[in-house]
Length: 430
Image (tube, rainbow, N blue to C red; front, side):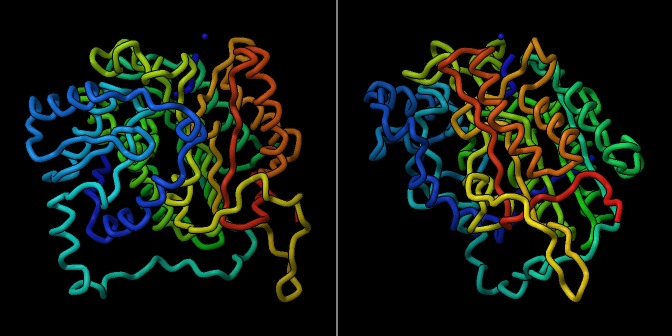
């Protein structure tokens, strides 16, 4: 969530399920700091209440137990992913998102997964990774973008005052003849009622279709986030995202699978995704039965929130080893290949906050604090992405503490597949 004071996507294929199962184990070994330090308040009574909810909702062979960290973890057998999501959601309603452990193939059996994986070796010939290669691309030829801002929602989710405005500011930077110089016909702009899941999905598919290897693709999305799903991912809420039954929020938002398919199928070797989104309880207070008793996770403070995690970044970008922004060097000069300078390239995911934080809106700025400083940095540094991020990050952290409280944190983060990801979002004058 940003806190304030038709494309039909197929269910994951058996190949995708296999990859998800391979990465899911890492989720349990990369606990947030709060989960490592906090004493779990989950009791036997909470576990019993969740198991009773399972029975009432037709989950007859699944159950919950406590894991080694005192969190609730799913056990038993489930018919399909829909039933897993229903169980995961029911557990969150009792103890909150903070105390439900991500699902791993070691903890549960899912009949649908087993049926798909049963044909793994028989169908191994279809395991063809998308062609991208490690060779650097040529100079940027065409530049494409998708800009999304969602502040109005159909199904009782709290509105965001400045999301559409933030998207407009980013769009205007890209298409301004004196700044980004993107051709308006190459930029899809969706806000509020036009920013449905189908429309966003169609726009992502179009970018996959038209972008070539030497092109630059930019995706900006500003909206609320969903509660962390069974793999720990925070999805991007669209205008028509549903909240009843509660697990529908994961099925009707821009989920990790959609973005991963977009990245995997994109030929462009220069890809930038900026996600100004996070989950916060306040977005869902008006939705009956969505939050646990007290409106937050057991033992959590009022500023409880969840942003984009590094595990999420690794899965979406399809890279085991990412360059995290603290490791990124200062901007380097363009390298030379065959006597011709090579502009920076790679895949970059920028999030407005860290995994255990909210992303805040500001009355003073009349904007998301993160988006305001990111666009300000792009203006100051002639569209330099890495320099704009480095400019924005400390100013976001400082502004949040000044306006929201000394105990409130927001730390934007960047993950990239290469060390030098300082791709210019303005047209080169060479």
